[in-house]
Image (tube, rainbow, N blue to C red; front, top):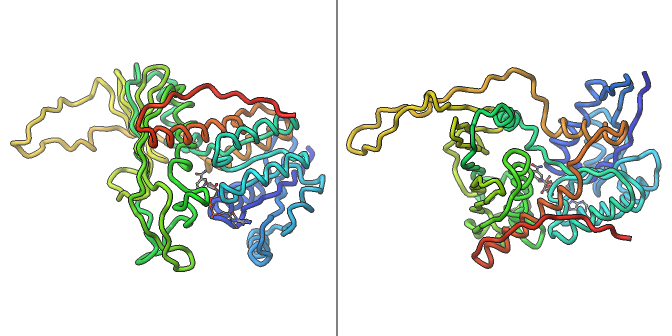
Length: 387
Ligand SMILES: NC(=O)c1ccc[n+]([C@@H]2O[C@H](COP(=O)([O-])OP(=O)(O)OC[C@H]3O[C@@H](n4cnc5c(N)ncnc54)[C@H](O)[C@@H]3O)[C@@H](O)[C@H]2O)c1
């Protein structure tokens, strides 16, 4: 048994996603569990070097998590052959530049979504990586959430019969920052800084819909900036220039209709921050982040419209939970492990920069649909090799 140390440059690691999901719950968790075991018995041990602007914050993270390597000099760490992977969870507008530099330095690439704010730039990254022959991956964490894995299992088992429609309800109230601090970074609400819920969430909806339900044929979307003014991290009032809600409808090649409401300006009265309702000829399901409940055709109660009497049904109690028959690890960690096995042992991995670009494509077409007030077809995306 050999231990294979893999140097990983982590850029943007002081941010919300970088610290919580990628550093603590993925990389540090993998180190604490003793690395990742390969089928030949070897162990992959991720060895991160934390990169950013502020030495004090990086030093604090390194100390807290029992690590040793940090740097404020990206060029220097990119020049070091020990570091095989460049990971980026900076703000979206900074990502492309970091990835370009890393590809030039011959690093494998793993990064957050969206890969860029425009399709052109997302595609450029995919083609640069392909031309350089570096392995690459983009976070598609929702695929590995327990609730969605249960839903996938229901689909694979044929539970639904023919799937007719899907309704995805995502959102919660993001505080404006005046009475209470906002729970998301302020750049999310400024278009000029890469913000906007369409750019953010449609990157997720693309892969969720594609993997669970089918190829998207066309999209219709209306966006809104419901909360016009917010207060930032420094207590300064600013104008929200980006959309904070999006009401989308997707028609799939197989005829399934998918609706997706995404909003940072709704108060939650549902089982979870994301719920996905699937209705099929044989049964229906509602999946949240962790749970999933079902109602089969055979035990669907007869609902009768009658507002003249008190509602006799407790609708919630008419569903059965899909049991938790297995342990589900953190969704980000699951994907990190797959990508590391891909880099070290060449195991298959297809959630790459081209797939990431398809997310940016869907966001861009949804923005176009909103602007032009019409349905927009989603053409097949291919990567052109750049030389
Ligand atoms: N997969 C998901 O579910 C998910 C969820 C939220 C956000 N994201 C994505 O992750 C990325 C980060 O989002 P976040 O919420 O963690 O943002 P954040 O603002 O908390 O973190 C951004 C990071 O970028 C760094 N950064 C910003 N400006 C910089 C500059 N000028 N120079 C150097 N570094 C700079 C910050 O120091 C920080 O480390 C975004 O692209 C976002 O779309 C993904």
